Amino acid sequence: MLKKAITFCFLLLFPVFLCLNVWQSFRYQQLQADLVTLQKKQLDLIEKNKRALAAVAVYSSPSRVGALAEDSPDLKKADAEDIILLQKGEE
Image 1 (tube, rainbow, N blue to C red):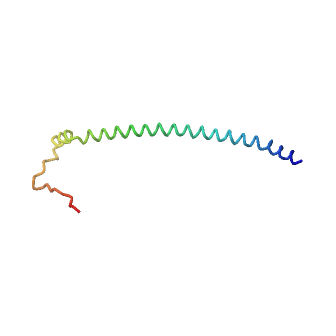
Image 2 (image 1 turned 135 degrees about the vertical axis):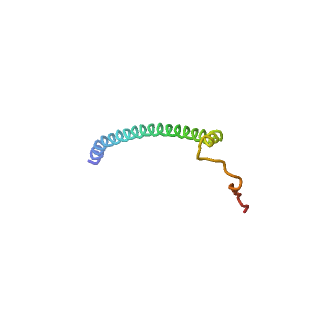
Image 3 (image 1 turned 90 degrees about the horizontal axis):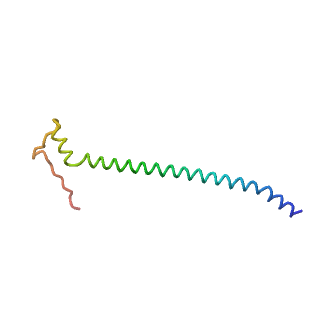
């Protein structure tokens, strides 16, 4: 009687475990696809960041800033008495 009950339990649990295994495999595949998507997005963001840093370097170059300052009528060269030099105090 006990042997039949154990066999019956195994027969009932086998499809349950099979379904759980299939569900876990599906979840794994879905997470793997999400990971690939996120990795592509990360690479795109890294490339955008590199382009932005390059643009900042170009826009902040001394030659470009000097040319813009010369062309702008609103900007004028500061007088020597208007310039204040700040130095970090020693601790």
